[in-house]
Image (tube, rainbow, N blue to C red):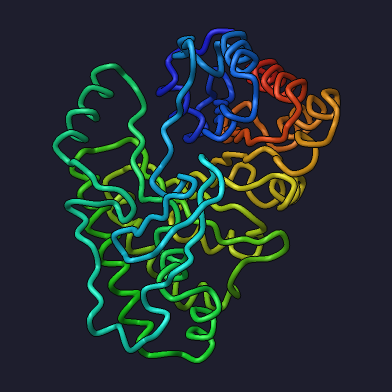
Length: 352
């Protein structure tokens, strides 16, 4: 199967304009290249050109690890948060919170969105050149805030327990910190809007295995208004608003959609296939995050094909509105990896 005119097909999917196929994304986490036989991984990629249209075989793969994904290399981000990870390629966690004590607030200053995205340095002129090249090549221009831009950023700065207690107590200093984070995000979004991307990503994990990480009431009071304000520039310019969240976000979905989200990336089995179909099918474009905990990790190849077919039949539609994505991490048997790639390619044209 050949993947043709990817940009137009994605836009038709999002707009419910009868796309030629279901957009499928298969992401291989950097840690996989030191856990799997690289020949096996490259054979799988080479054998699935629909999923990996730009694949070029290499003698040896040396993945690039983000600054907070490097083993034994603690990293202090521009917000002053200290990151650590135990394995290359796996995003670490924050071990030092710069405002764990509110007495440091007066001396605390946010980073500059002209030089950083909040995690990495950023070269806007070089980015503009890259975007112009993508447009000339007819590619989909996807922009975005860094993962964990608002709620998780506040958590990184204050610490999870401190942040929740601040919300419960109505801590007045929290408003100042939220405004600081929002201003940074808004300016960053505005810089991206100058480049006129097709789609703006707002990735932020809000869910746990069961339920969200904060109460719906606190989300509506402290986080939802920020989302609406930083998404507004994209909505006003006709740029597609894409939202990602891991975990169970069933009690927050209505708030996200009301805030202007047009494409929502959420996990399948955690939220429930039937629930997703009943709540969101035909309402917004669903980018379904395929299970990484149960079926693909511990099931059989047949189980995996059955899962993909069931999800497409339950959530999909000839008009569009469904995309699918899978993130491969170490531990999934190679036969299961192949079965998943096979199923994603096989069922991409289910409604064609």
